[in-house]
Image (cartoon, rainbow, N blue to C red; front, side, top):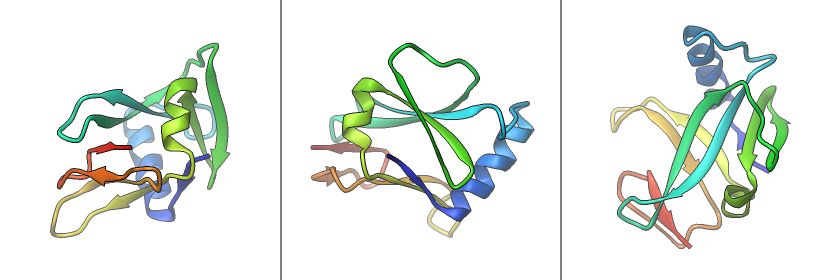
Length: 109
């Protein structure tokens, strides 16, 4: 399961509304793909369609979908949003990652 902080929930709701998605019905798709300076990188998009192997769950009033392959890499991760001086954006705090890159967008196990 992926946890969603209050700041991430607020920002997700704002962005979904701006892009024509409904936070009550649509969902955030979180995944992992090969690439990045540490080997694996995170993906975060909005979606309305579930795949056959997707896992759907709700955390902090946000519906999250993760494909079966990515789920194993993301169990226990907390999705946060940072708007500080060092940059804005979503941050994945992943307890499974052994190493992350400086920007926080990629990791390795």
